[in-house]
Image (cartoon, rainbow, N blue to C red; front, side, top):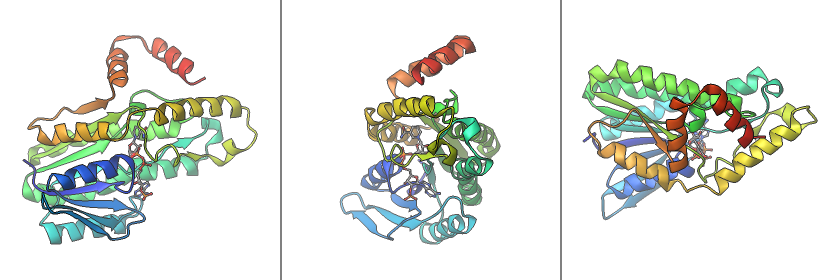
Length: 273
Ligand SMILES: NC(=O)c1ccc[n+]([C@@H]2O[C@H](COP(=O)([O-])OP(=O)(O)OC[C@H]3O[C@@H](n4cnc5c(N)ncnc54)[C@H](OP(=O)(O)O)[C@@H]3O)[C@@H](O)[C@H]2O)c1
């Protein structure tokens, strides 16, 4: 429906890697972006699909532009983008410097902005395209001791929902996938703020809260659960604005609309304290 060329950011690990492999096996020409690309090409002879690993730091305009330009040259454009690149930042608000918060936003929010701005001109020229942004349940329920991660995902929700309306007249669709805890490299890649590594009044509570989340991530489903959502979206003429991934999280999303904020706050505080 959308065409064969796909850009997947964060393709070296977790959800991005699993999506890239799935799409290669379905015959797509996948450009898998990561900061540490080895330039490898993995082809699937049966389907004709491939994954070409390309170097991109979503914090760096030049590397984003260079990948998009080479896809335009080699593939005649970009049909689908899956924005997976991201990481978690742990630490209480008081223990997080503006620079650490800025870095988090630079990847999780501005990284998506950079990629979208770079691909939209070719999608508009084709009059077709699909952008899948990987948000999070933390993008609609604020997580204590990971507030900047949550904030970056809340911001991504707003960007996605507003952009969706703006680009619809050009035939481009924008959707959000909001996973709950998933077993990937995300847990080991979690960054702690400098202050939170030392003695701070928040230390014990912060550690307990993040440990609870890490336990949930490591005992959660693998990235295939996100691949399933991606496959459904790509096959759908009119994909939903947001897809929450994980049965428990679907229920949480549903309840969030029905119950008072104080009750949600009580449950979240219980979960992470
Ligand atoms: N796992 C979960 O529980 C969970 C839940 C909800 C949402 N999410 C979201 O899902 C997305 C994928 O995460 P994951 O779970 O698959 O984690 P992961 O296994 O740690 O993968 C993260 C990917 O992001 C890439 N990345 C990080 N910073 C980058 C940068 N500056 N430029 C380019 N690539 C960068 C990494 O590649 P390199 O290091 O090779 O550059 C890696 O491929 C993230 O946006 C995350 O916030 C995860």
